[in-house]
Length: 361
Image 1 (cartoon, rainbow, N blue to C red):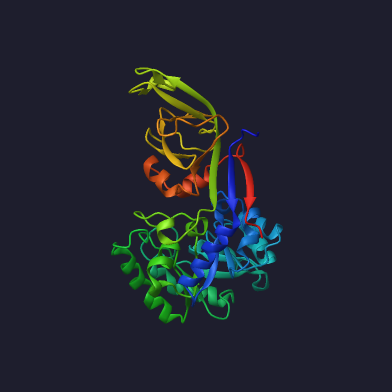
Image 2: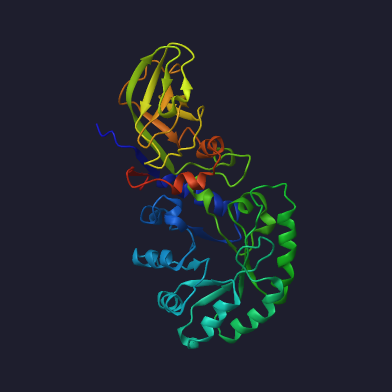
């Protein structure tokens, strides 16, 4: 038996989640977000399951160039844009679409021949105040981009919502109102809907939607899990039980002796730790799924191991597989207990974890 932790990547679940995004936004085209190595799932693994998406989106030019090298021929939006002449030239050569969020990026475009320019999508800062042209910068920017003939037949404006994960926030409506005059003024299409807006605000879906975290089965909402909104986990992280020990009341566990046994009881050692990407700050009480029942992490997370309370699973044996998150145990739950987000759980997985691909057919 291989006692290496494994991440099962379920491409059937990914196709299900993409289809859900398409059903929720039937009038829009879908630009699947696969930045950060497909949120830690591996772009080379997920590409075959994204054939039904009309386009792809990444954060950086090098990510887009890697997709082209892997054979991706769909339109690819680089949401961070380019920052030097070399990036712009490579984007034009590979047919990438560049977001433009700062006048300095237009300066670079103007230094190149028009025939050597890629298509550009102005990114508008509608209130998040991260990247984006401020509304008062938009008129000059649009005039310059139009003169460069890099807006396409019809301009596409994009923006990003700061509080879409909270459906009760008034911020989303304020940002929506901010972008409307610009759409009308430039007869532009819109890309604003991330996973949360796709699932909650059909009136804000625009022409291109950008599903990200929902593709991988985690919830975009602060108070709901992926399964609760109809998503299926793409990554299931599992590790084997390495040892079962029967310890006495009053004994302590692990580094710092931070957890004391409340009674005579069995304790299991699971072969995964922060060296594999499991969150070191996960506290005692974090759920782990073992043989169909939840047990609790106890004591500190080590580099290679965690310890779990086996009182609810006294029959557990060495070699049994524990699920840390995924099918049967939503990553959203683990993230909430550990004080983080599912995005970080996925992206922090290390190369020590063996990967299995399921659902390829």
